Length: 392
Image (cartoon, rainbow, N blue to C red):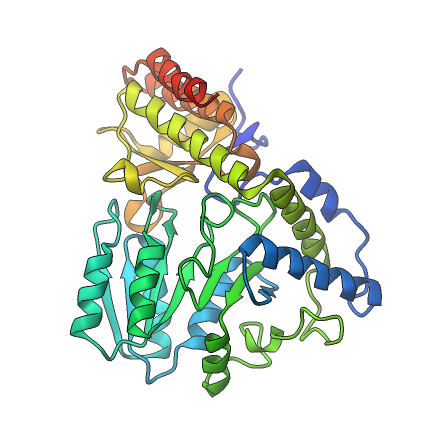
């Protein structure tokens, strides 16, 4: 029996939104407390403390009440002033997109752009900073999800820090799925959220803010205040002694609390390891079947999303539809310049388990063969299982 278009999928293997953990969904069903209830204010303070521990921050993170795209726009609006010279690092659709926000707040925009299956070279950043010592802010997307590639942000961050510039990092789809933390890469604004690798629904931004970023935003008269885009309004909201700027998303905070407990209790290193293993098995299986990985090399292939190049002559939209109808599995398309060129398989949160690599390969290979391709699905499954077995 074919899967109906309007039926819920059996398995969602997208790059976001992702499946939420069952415990997180139960957490969302907790009582929605009044935000000025002392019990909720203390609870909120405790959740922020858990986020601080998970992000390995020496300062309190900010929880903005909107999914991380809002957080990214807030970062541009708050930190960038009209006098700043911004260097935007674009290795994909999302990295390129941040430049449009940066240009809105400063006319002084420079870019380093690579092909969207490659990563930013730290030496190119060093060379650009030497050529343009007037650069004051650098922005980089760690995992550019529409390409399934990662940038070396720790190396880039060290270079930017030595130059004295501020660093904005988009870690929305990398934090929680691999080893990355705000202070490791010397980020001044580090934007992520619970809706990717932490396995929670979209609705919140988690942001690491350095002391000097707070000072710069406060000195920027154009930084949003009394606005949904304001970071400044939330500086002290973590404390039960201070009021919230506006009503927080109580149910989302309930869910985040559970997501952070799951992450910390399992152990970050164990969480990263299963994300990496699932992605490695998926890539090995896909290549053994005769498919090509979008990333230019294994080193920059993300452990949280595998992007597979669409075979020549295959309509990528029709491919994903066939996967959904035949197997009840949902993958992601590309975005912008990668749309139609690749299919993305997400390994995030609860689906970052090796068994999902086998499910993904079976569905993808089966749909492609039904469309006239001649893929060795069994060889691909064997290759994936070999990777999984070698890890035991």
